[in-house]
Image (cartoon, rainbow, N blue to C red; front, side, top):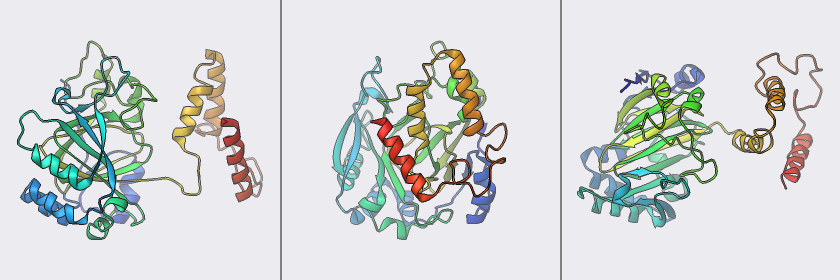
Amino acid sequence: MTILQDIPVWENVDYDRFHNEIVPLNKPAIIRSLVSDWPLVKAAKKSASSAVDYLKPYDKQTIISALVGTPEINGRFFYNDELTELNFKRAQVTLSIGLDRLLAIEGNPNPHSIALQAVQLGDVMPDFQPLHNQPLLDKTIKPNMWVGNRAVVAPHYDINDNLACVASGSRKFTLFPPGQINNLYPGPTLNTPAGVPVSLVDIRDPDLKRFPKYKLALDAGYEATLNAGDAIFIPALWWHGVESLETFNILVNYWWGDNPENKFSPGDSLLHCMMSIANLEPEKRKSWRHIFDYYVFKIMDEPADHLPKDLEDILTGLSPEQHSAIGEFLAEQLK
């Protein structure tokens, strides 16, 4: 098996260095012990039950979603063999109920797989963020919590930058650059485990006969194991698979990068283009690629350079009225 590249480890990282040196590289980065002083991390280093005892008093009993899989899935939240259904069920619980259930099965050698995913702490535990400072991000960026037992999440991408902090247990991260998408064998785009396509390859036991190009992805891949207190920066659109290695694991992550003034999502645009362009004749697709390269990806020239700077246009800058009108026009077209 190919030995993947190590993810670079950065030292002495503060807010300015993170945003001025690490983020602009658009490559993954490890920051050891970034949140070792968090009260949750200190409790979790004692035991799983100590972590649970710490969290439960802050739970506002908001209903959250839990993923539950039978022991037969071996912790792999995925599909059935035909890719027509997911291999797990969703349940509605409170955080406290989910935590208690995870503790109850911690000693089971063949447990059900349970994952409390993307728990929005601003709603579920509003007192968490003030007690757990994130020194690298603005306080306006809200944390999410992921809790579960041993499991593996298939490689997928996020549409925003991601800072993920291990608060309990340990997790192995396997990352691939965006350009490896064709070697990762993405699955369905609509029926997905968590909203974006996932790789069909089992990163714990890849079937290279069925997925031979995955070997090329491995040659370009990175991996690292993080323990409680460590953090990893995952740039937007980098594929990442995550394996939770212990019987009780907690991760807190932060997504950022959305422009609140821009209601147009690149993910929505991708879906629209897949519907409108992907099935055109090859020569037509080639022509559209030139148009996109010019206007969207700007790999030729800056398309606004020859236009008056005070012109109100998509290329130079829209007025609020124009921005609103274009949004209404696109919404009408999509009807």
